[in-house]
Length: 100
Image (cartoon, rainbow, N blue to C red):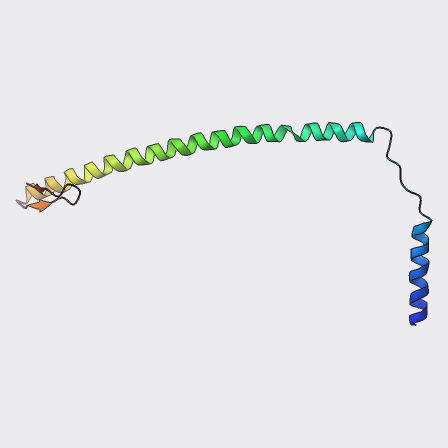
């Protein structure tokens, strides 16, 4: 059995030696260059996409920071108003002052 296996392997390897090398078509390289030029266009689109993403991210960070600062001031005003309605005194943790 092992001998027949070896013979089969040798026969297969011998058939590989008889195969002719394939030649590229006459327009192969011109088609290859055309494909390479087309593949450069998505890089240009990627640059615009990344620039847009950066602009949107900067806008979102600016909006978040602006909103959070305004929210902090509004919260302090609301607590001060509630304390004054109930005749309470409280200390703001943001300013360390007594609010009346």
